[in-house]
Structures are given as structure tokens and as C-alpha cells.
Length: 236
Length: 236
DNA sequence: CTGGCAGTTTGCGATAGCGCAAAACGGGCC
DNA sequence: GGCCCGTTTTGCGCTATCGCAAACTGCCAG
Image 1 (cartoon, rainbow over the protein chains, first blue to last red):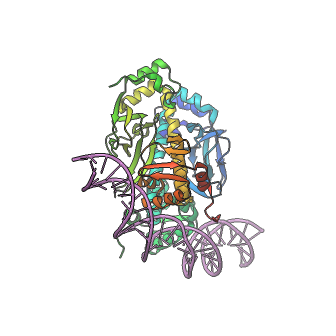
Image 2: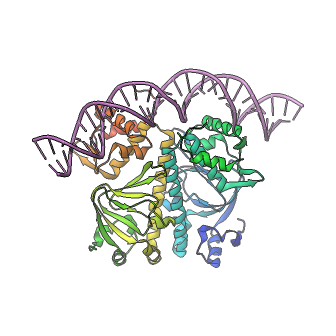
């Protein structure tokens, strides 16, 4: 139960409009915990006893079908909340959360949510806002899956990851956590084989450099062009 | 500016936890309007000046790409809110809303939202809940698009429509508003041609009866079976 | 240093579903 | 009552992408 410095989280969207002394009170209800790489924060279907705020690291939220197929719902970056089952009135987590890197999270008991919201209505408003943004993003993703080919979808996915969690390099942007071909396939609705083929092609064109769970965008602009290209505006 | 009877809407999820006299006050801020079949309630990209509650009829929310392709985000049923751009902090509507039937809506100015939420915090909590549910539904849709074949996706889509807006018949369930093959294609990420072929097939098997913008599920259970069938558990 | 393994690459059919084209259909409007 | 237009049906070739199989590779553990 480490002490958390309010100044570290005060600027987060979740706490917008919350007074410093109130923030202290909110944080007193939380505990922090560390999850090592590849360990589960919670499992799909488990009792939603807590909700989370990621402080360091990266977490992958994935949803599994009855038949065992998975999709990646999203990658959680530091400063973002996850596991908000209570927000939708669900008593069980609708997805599994796995730390893809060693990660540190703040944990509140779900039972504290109603009281927190009552005392600090901004929390509800702020959460509504972030959930709304995620809903928009989901719709965009559906739109892409409906109208674009695989290559474009992969391009968009990588650009989003780069924006959210890219580390600027001298020449290019590196996705700042381990991510496999399979993961990207599960983000874009395709297979790891197809993703591998696409990345191989891009690598030959100097657009990316990649290896085992590692991707560097060497030519982000070139990838933007790919992402926006109309499929049948023929390549040379 | 018709007077709206509070008792007609008091039971809606949006107003859960709101006292009757407060409800009166909330309703005083709204006006009602009627939209005839195929008219637009608002257009994607337009200034989000209002948010809406559907009283009668049905509304289709659709999102359009820069290149003109469309997807149907959802069908709005009576009692549901839509056009909640303010909830996500957007100043423009992210989709277009079209009345698919003659419809009646309540309209609040977006500018009233902050004040309403402050006076009646339940509104924020209730809205958070519904937006959360919609987010879950979006994730489910993404999961389906990633892992299922077109026929299964169409089956799921029809079952959802039947559940949300189905009219029970002597023998079967009818989707209670005009809906074309094209619409279903845009809900499931396929083409109207493929949807037409699938429905023709089903019609021959007696699963559905359909015509111009009209679909009746004659054997809902049979469609459930289709929806859940593992694609490669060969048909006889 | 070296074996083993998870992750990746690549080849090669197979095919679900698309895209185009054209005909049939049905309803409402004049 | 007949015409016109939006919707639906259906045929046919095409191809993007899958699915399976097999080889490869970088990395960690011992």
C-alpha cells in the first residue's frame, strides 16, 4: 500500500475539476500494485471487484470468444483508466487485462465508486467523457473494418499505437512496448500470417524496421500515405 | 412546442433516480419535434447544438467515410437517447441521424447539459451507464466482424434487431421499421448483394420471409442456431 | 556455449465474398 | 390504371486473404 503523490496524477483527465484536497481523499481509497510482464490484472468473466488507473507500463485489454478466438480491445497507456465494469453496470469484467510490460496501477474497490461519484460529481462527468471517446474510437474501428483492406487497417493501427505510445527515435518512432504480429492481427481482424507478410513488404520498402515483438516506424509519413490510399488507385 | 407528459418518460433509464418534480423541470428545458420518414435529424459534422430522446419511431445513426462509404452505427429505438456529442466533449456530430419512420423526439439544447448535470447528477451517472453499454456492444460487434463469417454476422444482426424492435406475429417476429438489404450490409460489414443472397437462401429454408424493406423472422430459433454455428462444422 | 522455443517468415493452394452487370420486381405517384 | 424508380435478385469471374505446413531465427535458460 504505497503512498501515491497527488501531484503525479492531478493533471489526468479523470481528475479534472477535482480540488487538491479532494484528490488526496480520493487517493486514500486506492492502493497501488505492481504487475510483472505477461501477468494478468484481471480475467474476463471474473467478479469486477476493482477498477484501475495505470501509472506506469502498458496493459492489453482483450476479449475472448466462447471458441477461444481473441481480439485486442485496446492498449492502455499510463494515465488511463481501465476495468471500469461498474461504469456500465456490469458485475463481471467483459475482457481480460494483461500487463505487457512491468506495470504499476492504482486500484480502487468497485464498491467505492458510488460514494466517490456522489461526493465528486466531476468523476462521473470525466469518466463519461473518456468512455464517450472510446465509443467513438470503436465506431471508427468498425468503420475501418467494414470499408478498408487489411493493409490499410494495419497502417492505421500502427499509427495509432505510435501516437499513443510511440518513442521518438533519431530516425523514426518505436512502439514502446512488446507487441507481436499476432497482437496486431487481433487489433485489425486478420491473421498473424497476413500481418507478417505486410510488415515484410514494408520493411523492404524501408517503411518500417521490425523484429521479435518490436516495431519501429522508419517512415511514418509513408505509412500515413498507405493508410489513406484508395485501394484501387493502382501502385506502380 | 408540445407539452410532454412526465409520466410517459419517467420510467426511462435516463431518468432513473430523478424525482418527479425534478423531471418536470428537466422536461421544461426540452421541446419536441416530429421528423417524417427519411428526413435527417442531424448531419455528421454539423454543429452539435442539441441532444435527443426518441419518443416514437425509429432513427438510424450512420457514419460516412471521406470516400462516401457508410456504416450503420445503430438503430435508435423509442426511449433511447442519441446525438450525445456533448457527452464525449465533441462539438460536432460524429454521425448522421435519419428518421427511418415518422418519428417524434424530445430536443434539449446542448448548452443545457452542464447545468442539468450539475443539478441532477443522476443524469450523468445514467448516461455513463448507457454509453458504457453501447461501448460493450461495439466491442461485441468488432469481435464478430473479426471472427465470424458474413452469414453468422447477419444472423446476429437480425436477432438483435428483432430483440430491440421486433413485433411479435402469430408465427414469427417482424422487424418493426423499414430496413433494406443495404442497411443490413452496412451493419455487418458486407455488401447488399451478399445480404440478398443470404436472405434468399434463408427464405428457401423457411427461416425468414422478406420483401421490400421488410423482414420477418419465421424461425427465430433456427436463426439462433445459424448464428452460433461453428463455420466448419459442416452442413449436411 | 548451446539447445529449445516462442515468435516470425514464406510458399502454396483453397475459397468466401466482392464487384460488375443485368434482369426482375413491386409500389407509389400522376 | 399505367409508368417510373428504388429495391432486390441472380449469374459469373476475380482476388484478397485465409489456412495449413514447414522452415527459419533470435533469445533466454541452463
